[in-house]
Image (tube, rainbow, N blue to C red):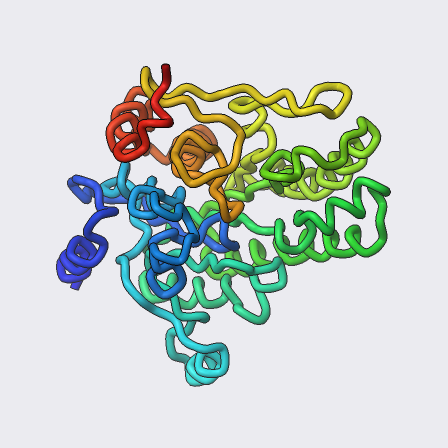
Length: 353
C-alpha cells in the first residue's frame, strides 16, 4: 500500500514533485488559511482567473509546494490529490467514524489549510485539527516525531479592517476579543493534538503584520499608529512563544521578524523603508505588489513565489534547530539556481541590471 501511495503521488503531482529518494521522510501536516493553501489547487484556482500568480500561475508556488519540490524525499506531506467534501457530508462521515474533511480541495493529503479559514476553524466548523488527527490515527507510529504547522489568525484579526481599529487603539475591544479567541483556539488545538499524539512536534507561526504589504504600506503613517498595531499583534505572539518555552515539542516561528530580516520595514516615523532581496545574480525582489516574480506580494495579496521559497527555507531551519529534524538545509545557492532559471522565464523585466 505504501508503494502504491508513493506511485500515485508521483503521477498526480507532476510539476510540483522533486527528485528524491523517499528514505524515511518526516511527516509534516498543516492547519491554517490561505497562507498555506496550495496555489495549484485546481478546485479553487484555475490559472486563468488571475489568482495566485495570474499569467505567472504555472511558476508561482506556495511554501508547501516549494518544500515538496526542494525536499520531497525528506518531508512527507501526504499524496497530492483531491479530497474533502461539503460540510454537511463531512459531519455525517465523522459521525459514522469515517475519515472526514471539508471543504473539497486539491492539495497534499496532510494539508488541511483552507483559504478564508479563521481560528475557530481549527477545532470547530471546518474542524481542521480533529480531521487531521483522525487521519493521523490511521498510522500513529508514523507521527511519532512528525510535525504539524499551525499558521492562522490573519483572517480573524489581521486584515485591513482590524488593523484600522488597532491603529486607533491597541486595546480595541472587538479586535482584542478576536485575539483572545485565537489564542484559546490554538491552545485547544495543540492540547487536542498532543492528547492523541503526544510525540508529534508543533510549529506555531506568529501573526504577520499586513501593514507591510500592498496598499497598506501607505496607511497608518504615524509612529503612534504603528506602535499600537505592533503592541496588539505582540500579545498574540507572546502567548504562542510562551507555549513554546514551556514545551520542547513546540517551536515558535516569528513571521514578522523573518520578514523584517529580509525586506526590512518602516522607519521611526512610520514611513516605508523597505529594502530589496537579491536572489543570485539575476533576480531582485522588492516589497511591491504584482504577479511577476520580482514582487514579494502577488496581485491578489498573497505571498509571491520567492517569498514562499524563502519561507520554506526558514521553516526547515526552525524545525532542524528546535527539533533536530535532520532535514537537509535549503541553501541560498540552491534557491538562486531554481529561481534564477524558472522564475525569470517569461519575465525579463525582473532580471537584475
